[in-house]
Length: 78
Image 1 (tube, helix red, strand yellow):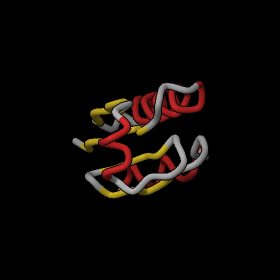
Image 2: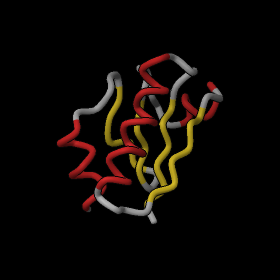
Image 3: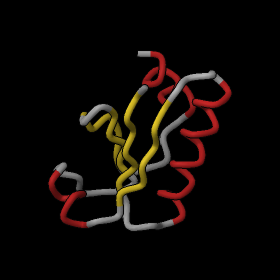
Image 4: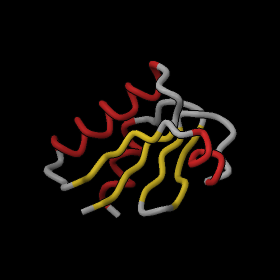
């Protein structure tokens, strides 16, 4: 199971990112655990300067926008 963290302060883009990742994972029948992290200290600990940011297995794979479907699919299939 992949551990996915979406970092952000709770903005609409952050919420949508969680929804999109969860939806695509369900469609692909891939087991994921998605966590929405809003603690600024934790976010800064990853060196993230713009949100939403996506952390998969403790690696920052994306930040600053809602990721495109193709990117999410490639992350989930790795």
